[in-house]
Amino acid sequence: MTVHIPVLAGELVDLLDPAPGEVAVDCTFGGGGHARLIAERIGPAGTLIGIDRDPEAQARFEEMAAEVSCHTRFIRASFADGLALLRDEGVRADMVYLDLGMSSMQVDTRERGFSYSYDAPLDMRMDPGQQLDAREIVNTWDERRLAQLFRRLGEDPNSGRIAREIVQRRDRSPIETTGELVAAVEAALPAAVRRRFGAGSPAKRVFQAIRIAVNAELDSLDRALPLAWELLRDGGRLAAISFHSLEDRRVKRFLAERAQGCVCPPDFPVCVCGREPEAELITGRAVVPTAGEIADNPRAKSSRLRSARKLRTVAAA
Ligand SMILES: C[S@@+](CC[C@H](N)C(=O)[O-])C[C@H]1O[C@@H](n2cnc3c(N)ncnc32)[C@H](O)[C@@H]1O
Image (cartoon, rainbow, N blue to C red):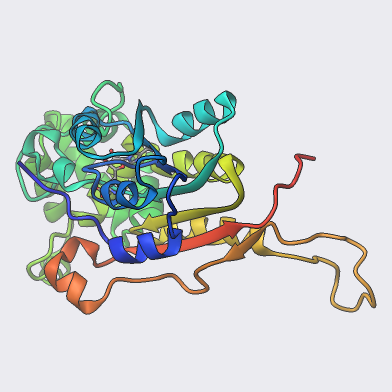
C-alpha cells in the first residue's frame, strides 16, 4: 500500500498548536498523515473534520477514524464546497489547514495518469466521478488555449512549440496516454533544450499545467480561502502548504490582506479609515523544509507553509 509522507508535519502542528477539545478541519485529508498528528493533540473531546474529493482518501479516513479517540467526520467534496457546507451548518473551527496538490497515492497509482514517469491513460482527475479529464483537454482544446495553459499554469517557456506539436499529432490520431504526451513534448523541443533537463523530464511543467486545469485547483483555492477564514473562531488558525508559486502567491496575498491595518495614505496626520487587522501572521516568511526532510522525502522539496491567526471577525460589508 502506498504511504503518503506528510510534509512539514512538525512545523504544521507547531504553528497550529492544537489544544484538547478543539475543532480542526483538514481540507486535504489525503492519507491522513497530518490529521493523525492533530487528532492526537485534540484528544477525545476534540473533533476532526476531513475533506477530500478523492474516494481513496475517504477509505484512509475511515481507517483513521477507527483508530483515533476524537470525534470524526468526513466530507467527500471539493474543499471549497465542503467548507461552504460547514459554514451553512454553522460549524466554527479552531484550525483549518490545507496541504495542496497531489498525494503519493494519486501520483504512484499508475492508472490514474498523474505521472509522466509511467505510461497510463491520460486522466489526472482527483475525483474520478468528474467529467473533465486530461484526455479531453489534450485532444479538444485549440492550439492557442493549450499554449496559454502551459504558459500560465506550467510557466513553460516552450509552451507554443509544445501546443503546436500536440495539435499536429492528435490530428493524425488522438493522444490517449501519458507516454504519448511525454513523446509529443520531447519531440517539440530541440535537442539542445531537451539536454538541459538531464535526468528530469521536460514534460513536468506540462503535466502540472494540465493537472491544475483538470482539477480547477486555483479556482478552488480562491474560493476556499475566504470560506476557511469565515469558519474560524476568533483566535483560530489557518495554515496552507503549497507546492508552486501560483498557489503560494495566492495564500500569501490572502493572509497579508487580512493582516493589514490602516490603509490611509502615509501623509495623513491621523487615521481616518479606522481599519484594523483581522489577522496576525504566524509565519512572516514562508516555512520551508529542512535539507534533512528533503533528503528523506524529495517530494517535500518545493513545499512552503504559511499561517495566520484570526484576531477578530469582521462583519461582511
Ligand atoms: C498533498 S495531499 C494531502 C496529504 C495529507 N496532508 C496527508 O498528510 O496525507 C492533497 C490531497 O488533497 C486533495 N485535494 C486537492 N485539491 C482538492 C480540492 N480542491 N478539494 C478537495 N480535495 C482536494 C487531493 O485529492 C489529495 O488527496
